[in-house]
Image (cartoon, rainbow, N blue to C red; front, side, top):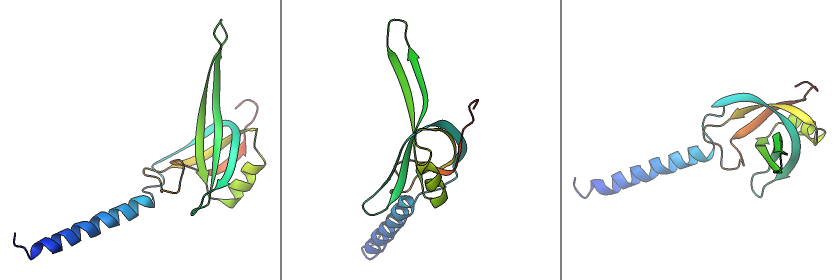
Length: 128
């Protein structure tokens, strides 16, 4: 390789690297996984300095052992949502048992707190 080619190769590499970094920062494949989760909505917040987003937390299950040991286990489901209708619904459901449908990003955008994005929500029935 002669010296005249070195700047071209370095520039090409830098452009490819920058392009990949920008693309990954925007997220890749938003429907990598889809599904439903049931739990109690514990928190909904609107936050962000540059990118405003709505973040929620659901308590999925609670397990306890009371045979002399007071052990508890809780699993949180952290998600983001951008749909104004879903946000309005969630605001009225804090503290209630709900079912959410979500999409999971393969690589989430840098402004997301979670790879899960809730796309719809409804109240859970007593037997669900």
